Image (cartoon, rainbow, N blue to C red):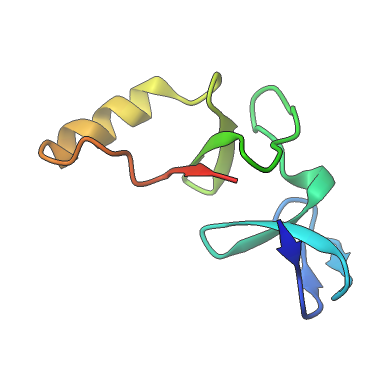
Length: 88
């Protein structure tokens, strides 16, 4: 969580974000705090929460699409870490 620093639009709702507002970031996208939510359960993701960013969508640890994760892991084989798994 950090200050946005310049004006722009939220990747979830498309509305503008004031430069002085705190934001969440994932893969170069910027979100209002209230818009940084799981695509499945809509629960807000908070700083320190584990989440997955898959094909432009955010997922909480509980709702991550396991089929996508498993296919992604099989393509990585030697790397046990999931590169799209983040901690806020």
